[in-house]
Image (cartoon, helix red, strand yellow):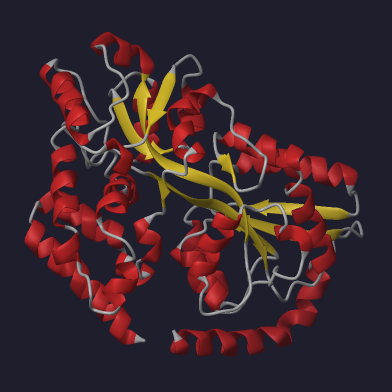
Length: 411
């Protein structure tokens, strides 16, 4: 990490020399202050566009330019190397954010009032990710959850209720399979979609403080993840004939058109499915990982946090936009359109589709995303996809340990 921070520091110094020329670019020809908002979520583009239009109507001297490119994480890393960081960012509160925050490129919001309405649990979550720096470098905005989405019409056809245990869920999967229907519509052509069930299972079975213990040599994938791997393979038995032939967009379309009874995704997939088929009735429940209902927690994390470049030319205008986004009206609109949950106190998701997970939030029966604490450089999604194809559990767990250790020993 030290080497990485030194590299960033060098790039920052080089970038200072470019600042003067960049200043001209930050003011549009119409005399407006121009600010770039970089987003790594394609799903929220229309929502952001609407919110930006409202802000600009009230603040005609500020021009917010939304940039949500494909392969956004790769684009962001490339821009970091080129010392061309955006003015503001709306990105996930995950390991990538932690690496960027620890590199010291984001603004410290800890002495502003922009954090006043944020729930403490989500502030703690992102501060843990940036634990090499004191301060708070992101504003948790919306939260998400890994869920089992189900087709209500098919659910009723089979006479199902939301399962509370692993045994109940696998019994339902078997019943659907025997009926000749597709139990789970997997989209493993996109390796990241395998992380949805992985995180749901591991978040409940890996044990407390796995990442910390792993770094100290007190835990390992071989010791702690055997049951996680077994249950991933069990779920795979209930997919369709071409689990690796379809990606996320394909899966949304197929599920919207009636293929599959269950869809293992995040809540963010719901508006995408409803865009394709607004008439489809959906429900959700947490994946029941064990046979003890009180031990089955919903995996939830910071889906979008707002932050800004610490070297931004127009910080006051940017903070004005962030404050606008944090107002209850805008936060409510965001979670309603995105079927998400707010990180702000008093802003509640009331969509009936989410009824099946409301108790998990109400009772704080939650756990974080395990992979957010993995070193990003190990690229777990690719290794897990490889495992699901080979089904060689022992080799897979050894590889996870080896890749983690390799990255840890690098710094």
